[in-house]
Length: 129
Image 1 (cartoon, rainbow, N blue to C red):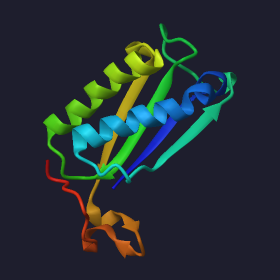
Image 2: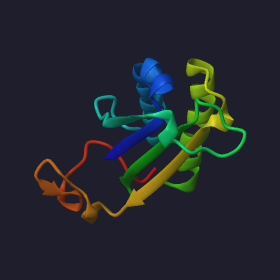
Image 3: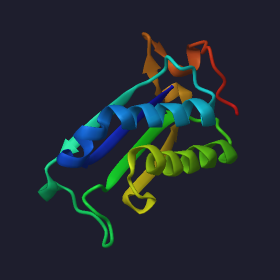
C-alpha cells in the first residue's frame, strides 16, 4: 500500500497533473514492483503566495510525499527516488532541483484499508523487495 501526495503551485501543477500521476505511478510500479492497478494519488494545487520555496527554485517547485508500508530495502527506495527525478525531468520537464521527494514508511499495523488492519491483509504484491 502506498499513498502519494503532490504539492505545487496551481498554475504549474494542474496542467501536468495527469501526466505527472502517470510518471509517478510508472516509477512506483518499476521500483517497488507494485501492481498497475494500485494507484492512490492526491494533488494539492496551491496559490503561489502559500508556497515558500528555497532559493534557486522556480514556480515549478513540486513536493512529492510517498507514505507506504515499511519493508522495502534502501536500494528499492533509492531506485524510486532516482527514477522520479529522471523521469519527471524527461517527461514533464521539471528540473530535478525543483522536485523534493520524501518517503515515509509506516508499520503495517498502523494502516487500515479494505476494512482491516494492514498487518492482517493478504496483499497481492511483495513488500520486502
